Image (cartoon, rainbow, N blue to C red; front, side):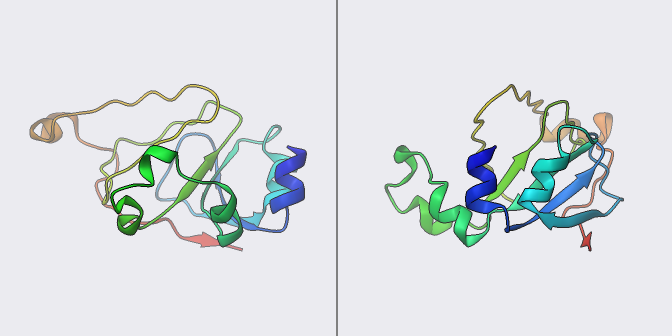
Length: 132
């Protein structure tokens, strides 16, 4: 964590309360150093757009750097926790590329024709609101 603190400690990041995503609650803004101080002992996780400094350092895998792929990227987010986070069943407004650095992530894919049977917890799309 020393490297993250040294390189990005002052960068502002979005943090969520609890490890079970709740899209009706607001998260909070803090800096990376504060988040790193708290994430192991608190029920929080970071889900934040990459800042320009982070984007310069966290590069895409080589296989994605050809064919104009990067011209179609809209958002780059980093998710960071000490494990045990759960998202609500949802659809995303954009296609996603998921790169896991460490740990395990389980995805459940559901055919859209079954959405009325399964029913997501939160059908609206969009970004969460954060407060200071």
